[in-house]
Image 1 (cartoon, rainbow, N blue to C red):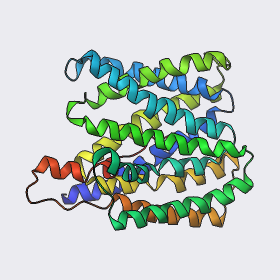
Image 2: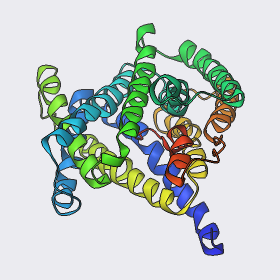
Image 3: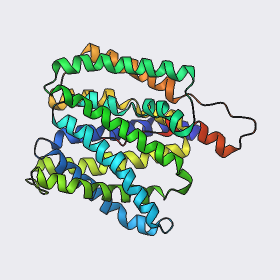
Image 4: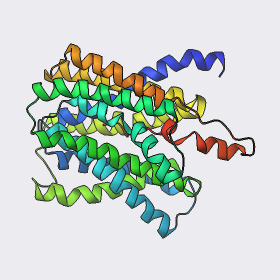
Length: 317
């Protein structure tokens, strides 16, 4: 890393954290004037349509099998993932707790890497998982007592996080055959929009009242949470170590909690603060671990051995 890159990284990290946390706040803001399916349909549709011209011009010609794969990833990584945590927020689950749960994706990937990719956890990673989960329990205790959501709603972010983890692992197994980033995002956004459309139609219609809150909220979600978060994330991955970039994203839950407290009056307690710190410590222990490179392994094998939990990050809000 050059001295210039080191100097620029703090600014990039700040923008990345703001964009990453903006998705959860944008969902919370938009639910004041529209249903969750309506919000997710328009976010996905506008994002996908905006990316489509670039996807058609940039990258190889895709086969039907590749397109179908992206539809499956959209179901797991967008429809279930975005739908799960957005519905949780809509039902009253604390926005910061949802953001913290979403950031547990590396823990889930680490736990699932052994059966799916044949990559067992190290002792340090197991300890990190236990530390991270204990922090979530601390946050959950205060959020549950202060929240208004039904008890079952707190399972939605957990199920969403697990769904995204499975999606990442499935894509990791076929990474060498994947389309370009723009093609993947365009296809997955358009596919998820098609999935959200009938749900939106059945639960309030495709078009909500075009209030200022809805328009601002959708613009916020498309520009900041989708285009901004992902473009800066991959820009950073090309120039900095994945572990550093991933650790930066883990700072988004504290900012999300502050935003939710300032904008919507959601509680922010000492217990939540302590729980976030504990969870972040566990996440860093899991994601910063790099498997030792076998002597006989080539560069590609060594990179893949250390990569899934290190590279993985949730899609913002």
